[in-house]
Amino acid sequence: MQAIQARLLGGEGALLGDADLLTVLLGAAMPARHDPDVLAGEAIARFGSFAGLLAAPLRELQGFAGFGAHSLAAIKLLHEAALRLSRARMQNETVLTDSARLIGYLTAVLAREKIEQFRVLFLDAEDRLIADEAQARGTVNHTPVYPREVVRRAIELEAAAIILVHNHPSGDPTPSPEDLSMTAQVVEAARVLGVTVRDHVIVGNGRWTSFSEQGLLDGRH
Image (cartoon, rainbow, N blue to C red):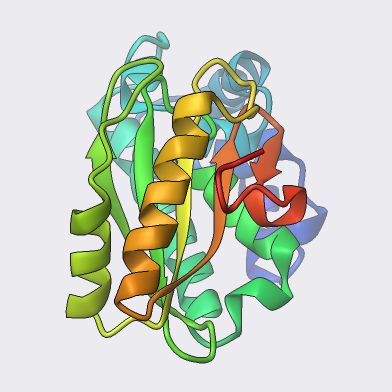
């Protein structure tokens, strides 16, 4: 493991494999464990990748034999740090100019959620990120959304535009009739108060749907 640490400190982290990175993380969080490389290999096999491990819900991580309180805390801390770094980068740029970065961030936040979560990205007049907030959590296939509450929060933050986001735990990001209707209601409520809905993104498992790209923002398709 010392050789892996040396490569990290030497700026070669991008050349390391997922299991090597996880070995270092587990070695730091569980110094008394003599075989972090074995546990790291098993964890990568279970969760698919280092990114998949970081994004896994806590309950899934807790169900994996070998992870203790220190390793779980280290994994979730690193995940939160990665999300904050991604948000900070978007706050300094126009969010919609780099759709790959936006989708990557939203996927990291929502793709492995087992229940629906509705989030709103609040943007300034130049489409830079002001805030990303979870507005509601629901069931495996439904989240209650209140358009007036969404718009009220946009006004509080002095946002000029918003991006609606939610996940489909089924993995299929195809919009439901309820998704289309809710989107149309938010678009209309926002329009009345001068707030623009830039997009509604549904995140699935490795897939997503952009209402803007599909021409669905008015909810009538």
